[in-house]
Image (tube, rainbow, N blue to C red; front, side, top):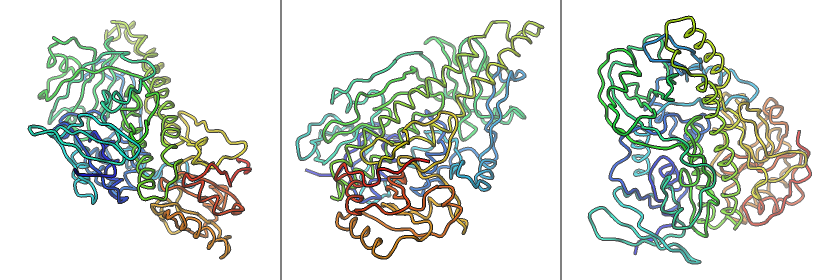
Amino acid sequence: MNSFDVVIAGAGPVGLVLAIDLGRKGVRTLLLERDAETKAYPKMDRSNARTMELFRRLGLADRVRALGYPADASMDVFIVTRLADEPILRLRYPTVAEHRAAIAACKDASEPLEPYQLVSQNDLEPMLKEVAEATPNVTVRFGCALAGFSQDAEGVQVHLQPSGSAPEQVRSRYLVGCDGATSLVRKTLGIPLQGRGSLRSLRQVTFRSETLYEQLGCRQGRHYYFADGGGGAIVVQGSRKEFTMNAALPEDADLEQAVREHVGFDFDFRITATTSWKHHLLLAERYREGRVFIAGDAAHLMIPTGGLGMNTGVGDAVDLAWKLAGTVHGWGGPGLLASYEIERRKVGARNVEAAGWAAAGVGMWRSLWKPQVSHATAEGAALRSEIALAADLHHRRVHEMAGVELGYSYAGSPLISSETGGGDEWETTRYRPHTRPGVRLPHVWLADGRAMQDALGDGYTLLDLDGRLRADELAEVHGAFAALGAPFDVVQLHEPHVREVFGFPLLLLRPDLHVYWRGHAMPASAGALARAATGHSGANPGGGVHAD
């Protein structure tokens, strides 16, 4: 019987990223996908700035961008009656190129390292599959479904059902369910979903047109929301040749006619896929049972307004990958894997809430709709103006959640050193950079032009920004992590500007570049620091520091 360190069920973006990251970390991984091929139609369309930072850490950011929107393509959002009509409202957003320029000029860490990127899931998945298949330690099996599993104190017995052949069994130390909304893993574990489900039913129509984007002319953008009473929207996918229309259409609707009515002018297209789906705001009661974990849509289901679903799932994958690796390689204590649910379920709950808040904003302006909105009358013009004012205020929720994307914190986790005076909450629309333990390390440029994140390795890093650590302190902290076998490095930089932005000269960073501890001097015991940071104890050697 074949054995693996980790078996992953589900090869969507979350499962693929988890497999790639585990393989890079030396973890023997089997990735299962019941479908024979990657998805043929789009689902998600936007990798947000944080996800692009994570792709950069995996060496994939440039490959992702090559699949999607060009850097100079419009990121604007429109409120319309039809694509043919004068827009009710145009919300302008920076292109990737414009955002890059803002990042290059940023001195206060308020910008991410990477801009967002529009890329369709059906373009992203084949690339990630190719990378996973080429990653050492990873076995990828499409057309092979998870049929069931059982676990004991030493591992998990995993039952496989390959397409067209006999059932198989493999043994693994851990199993991760990245198997989507109807997750077999979650259901087998008996984990309920909590929240509000089946809020709204929609049809998604995917169509391809070689000319539509160009025909839009000066009204080119990425999203078109319709003030039409049906709550529809058209999303331009990364290729600008593929589009999705989501609307409340009956099962027997003439889909081609529905597309033409929403566009409003003649153009050539062909429908390539259609599916029915529902809005949910649901969160799994727990993310783990023994040696089995869930991540991505298996753990949380969000209305896509705000684009938080897949992006939250990639965050799950990156958090779980280094903790599984540390446990498999023997340097992680029991607190390492225990922290996964504590950290990521809090983020999942916050993002489910944020997605609902964004969707409510759309509903606020749509509630003003009347049939007269498309009339060429004074009454119609007044109604369009009223909708424009409301959408300009409320629709921005969907596209302006920088605080949710960049400011999330793991404070309160046993794998984060606590500070007095510092909370674990974060804002929704505004990102305020800081280095309180629990947050991602803010992006800042070094004097030599490098990004700080690019100067840091894949293990734990003690960052010394003014060279204050003595030789004996360096030897002690190196020895403490070495005694555990944990990957560790000290990066000493004379960077007054970075020291000023970060507020502290010393920061201990986890492998995921979240701040574990910060201070002006090393804690009394480097051993206690290392043990706590690697999940071997609940000690808090950095306690007592007052937050700025």
